[in-house]
Amino acid sequence: IGEPVPVGEDDLIQLADVEFRLVRTANRKVEFTCVAPQLEQNWTISRMHEVLNQGRLRMLFQPIVTGLGGQVFGYEALARTDVPGLESPVALFHAATRLGLEERLSQACRAAAVQAIETARVPGALFLNTHPHESLGPDLVESLRELRHVSGDRLLVLEVHEEAVPEVGTFRKFAGALRELNIQLAFDDFGVG
Image 1 (cartoon, rainbow, N blue to C red):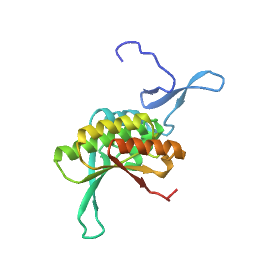
Image 2 (cartoon, rainbow, N blue to C red):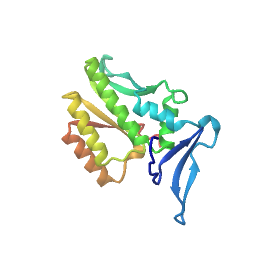
Image 3 (cartoon, one colour):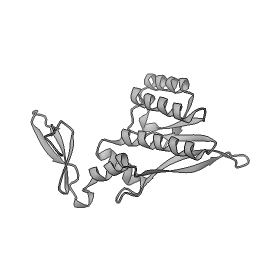
Image 4 (cartoon, rainbow, N blue to C red):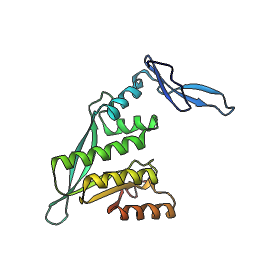
């Protein structure tokens, strides 16, 4: 920090090896709460910064094959990173959830997947995931509009986790927005919850 910077509610702050979030309590008092109370969980903010802002996110693609003939139909994008402590997808998305960055990470993963598969010129459908906590609203639709532009006429399929499905009217509106973008919809892990 080169000059004074105002700190706002819900900002994440790292001092030495301890991370804090600025919160307003029930009586409107502002105080710091520790984000990572255990030493081995420290530096989550810095590590997530490396993933989201320094290009330490890479995509792998799992083939999706047809039931008859076993032909490759498309690929599901899977996020990976080599940032210490976040190597597994579970740890990566758990850290994003703790920091309130699950939507941002999810958007970054989808953008990286489209860019990687288009750069490699691999044909086939591309299956993209949403985070269970991701809102099926205007921000998601706008980010998908940008991906549709980059991906041309490639078949895109958005996988929505059942936990993300809001009430029926909102979901119907979201599905309509996807149809307008020529993006198909699939349910991920449906019935697991």
